[in-house]
Image 1 (cartoon, helix red, strand yellow):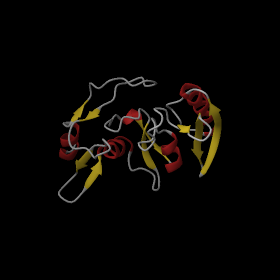
Image 2 (cartoon, helix red, strand yellow):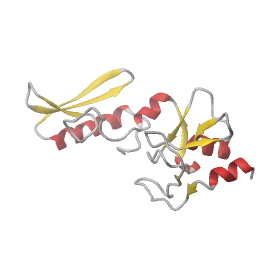
Image 3 (cartoon, one colour):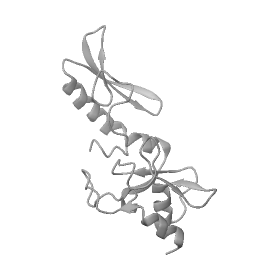
Image 4 (cartoon, helix red, strand yellow):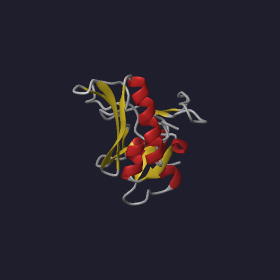
Length: 161
């Protein structure tokens, strides 16, 4: 193990929690993070990388150009290589969880209140298009419809499966 790798792994807590749909615990980065919670690691004075990318490439070699490293566990601080995979930008977006930060009318991803109709509406974005799940009397009904629609449209949607 190189000095850089030793310095990296000294900043990792391997006793993290086990997330839903995961067989092993998250290995949480304990050093500096971005405002979105992703770990940052300084390789040397001039090079910084995201900690999960360093972990992935240390275990599996360089990533394929143009691809991203996705957290299957959806924990941005996790650096467990078994929780990381190469994906396209589209696939990475499909594995997002939670409601949008600007969506204050619902706690469910893809659900919002339609003021003119007086019902909850469900929508899913996919390949640049917006697909409508319909209008519903309750927020929960809309959330179920949106989840079913995402499962039909998205191939890398781990959170809804």
